[in-house]
Length: 152
Image (cartoon, one colour):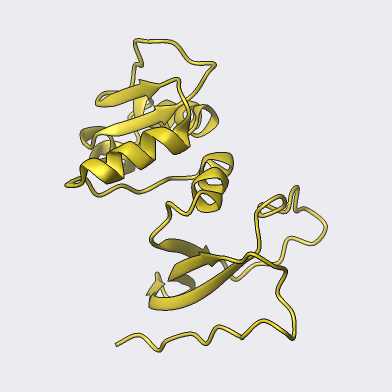
């Protein structure tokens, strides 16, 4: 996660939010040039260098399953570098036309998504899991369409 996500989530954890107990127990890597050691949230490690290089090294070492939480800029840089194996999106059935503040995928590359899993959460929200492929050219009629795979 990046610094903004760390500040938000560690604040929830420190306030005693029970939903964050499991996350507090897990090892976390925080990519930031603005935070300093020691990080106060248990099991958090600060990496002040390049997130792409750090994740590339962790993947090459193997044996560690990783996931990002929030941190749009970290996710974008990892996706652009081809380091994302799965992309999980949660679809909330709400349209925030007048109250929406930002389009969260502005600045992302064009990405083809192959659906590999889906789950309904609490009877409304959809958790969709995709294998992403960063496109070398803008999607168009000359580029083959990516057909979603039905989950087993």
